[in-house]
Amino acid sequence: MTSTPTAPAGSPTAAAPAKPVRRKRGEGQWALGYSEPLNKNEQTKKDDNPLNVRARIENIYSKRGFDSIDPADLRGRFRWMGLYTQRAPGFDGGKTAMLEEEELDDRYFMMRVRTDGQVLGVEQLRALGETSTTYARNTADITDRNNIQYHWIEVESVPAIWERLESVGLITVEACGDSPRPFLGSPVAGIAKDEIIDGSSALAEIKAHAIGNPEFSNLPRKFKTALTGHPSHDVAPEVNDISFVGTVHPEHGPGFDLWVGGGLSTNPMLAQKLGVWIPLDEVVDAWVGVVSIFRDYGYRRLRSKARLKFLVADWGKEKFREVLETEYLKRELVDCPSPATPVSQGDHIGIHEQKDGKFYVGAAPVVGRIDGTTLSALADLVEQYGALGARLTAYQKLVVLGVDAADTEAFADGLEKIGLTARPSNWRRSTMACTGIEFCKLAIVDTKERARLLVTELEKRFPELDTPITINVNGCPNACARTQVADIGLKGQLVMDDDGNQVEGFQVHLGGALGLQANFGRKLRAHKVTSADLDDYVTRVVTAYLADRTDGESFATWAARADDVHLRGEVAAS
Image (cartoon, rainbow, N blue to C red):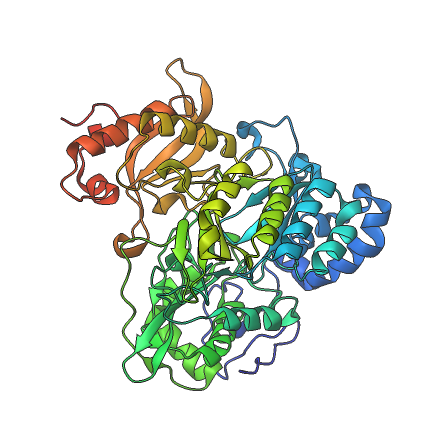
């Protein structure tokens, strides 16, 4: 494995070129000699490695209670343990940007449990369910980063939660923070009949090497990883900091292309494809090299630019590859054309045969919202039918692996009884929503409940939709639910209604996509919709599309050419 460069004084493990070219105004890049913290976040990390906060949670805060927590730990280092304070009740969206963070803090926490593409067997599902019902008021969401997310967690309960989860191989370490965030892995790795290569062993090796490792616990900001060997590119590789995507070299066989610099939020960028071939046993080295570039050369002065995508955009992929090869890998990568792009990315919903003759069953909750009772019931179902277990997906769904052929329909019926479905409508299957104002301190509007109501209404209005249309609902500009790459992306904000009142609403993005038509949705000048009018607005736009589309035309293609009046929902297409 590639060794890690030696750090300059005062900075953990950062490379220093022999003759750095100093920029006139430093961006806080360690490799260029700028090791002094330039903002409070960098100072907090320098003062104490955030991984050390675990001991204080276990030995002090859980015993003395919420009021004993050092503010630098509470609003900083706790994140490295997967903990954020949730939004205090009583503050509407207008207060989100007006109040200081401490004014929005509740005395309870959101907690993320990372799964990183691993199979959740009966023991893991039971532990997740019991944690929810015992400590989290029966809350649990499946996120679009393979996490289970709880709410209402008290600091006094955290050590007991860790003990229960870790007893079955689950952790919360670095599920948040300026660290290697939870990995996206293909939910059908190792079992899909059409898989190019199974990369799950590499993902597990990266996790074992990197998570909880001080070499990677002080990054400029979050670092998101995705890996898939499936041709449907089922991990949203275009919008991750680093993605390994299955490919086939004409001489060497299956391996992975390397994509870098993807990300959304307020400055969305699609990943740059390096067009290389990396064998399975060198994936970890490549990951270490890329994350080390981010650590050493990443911008640390402004949080708004402290993502790998800005460095990749400034350098270009040719220079990025050169630095990776010469300074970190110490070898050249093998050239290989990037793999073919699927028309759309796979979510694996439904019943599908595995390569071993068994079946996997992809199931959908409503916008990722489940609970501990459902997780425990899923554990019972998996045990009853002798299935292997479940993996989470990049689309707030889950896939159960290893169901016998004779049991697939009965298993699907069992899912229906516990609030999941392998036979969802388009709207349930294709709608995602972030946490929203219910719990998130950054949110401006309600998302989960609003999206659930929208799904219910659209199922009534378009029960037999013959083409997929995706809807992603976000409570703020940060795009946790990937607003810009949905057919209909909804970014929460306060808007004026017809009576001049400030109410919850959304800026609309139309025609975004991943896969073959990867692009960011079209925004219409000054076009916003109130939350109250959302059902009718989406109905008008979908009706216009269905009336105006050409044979086989997707919503994204139509939205790129449609008249503004149709996209604004002002008139139905003729």
